[in-house]
Image (tube, rainbow, N blue to C red; front, side, top):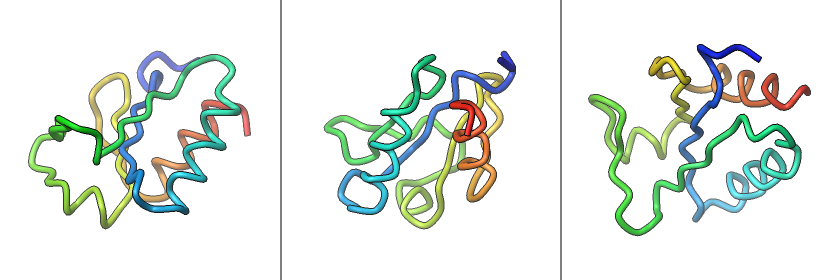
Length: 86
């Protein structure tokens, strides 16, 4: 497992049925525990990503690699699915 990438933190919108379903599927398949799920609507959530606002998180999928690099969109999903071996 690539220590620069994993664990990978995924920032998702729990109020979105599609997002919740996708994150549920990733959680179910994450046997090695390489993914961390951060619900952007959880009480007390404060975005730790520099220069990123909650509205940005609603527009585009964001993830933070273990080395701190932020990836967005398709790359975030690619790394998530690669981490669980899909």
